[in-house]
Length: 120
Image (cartoon, rainbow, N blue to C red; front, side, top):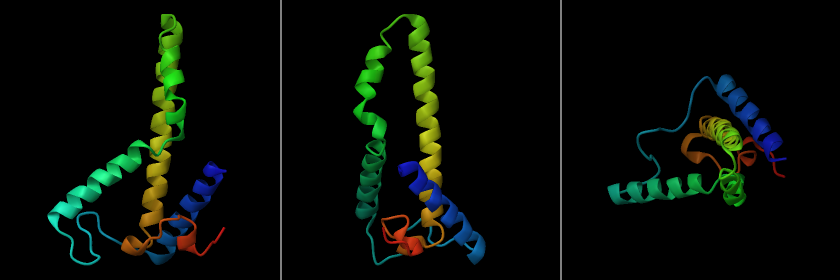
C-alpha cells in the first residue's frame, strides 16, 4: 500500500511539474515569514531526526544485524542485501519527497496526495 501510494504521488508530482513547466519553492532559504538562523538550524536537525526514523525496516534492524554474526557467506549476503535495500528505499522516497515538494513549493501539504486534491 505504501509503495502504491508513493508511486501514485511520484507520478502526480512529475505530471504537475511537467504541466506547470516550473518548480516551486526554494532550496536555499525558507520564504514563509521571518525565520532566524537558529530556527533554520533547529528545523534542519528536526528533519534529520525524521529521516533517521522514516524507514520501516528499523523495527527489524536488530534481527538483521543478529544474522550478520553468522558464517561469512551469510554475513556478506546480508550486508549486501541491507545496503541495496536501504539505498533503493532512500532513492525512491527522496524522489517522492522532491516530486511532492517541487510543484507546490513552500505551500506543499504534509500529506502527499492531498496536495493534488485527493482526500483518502
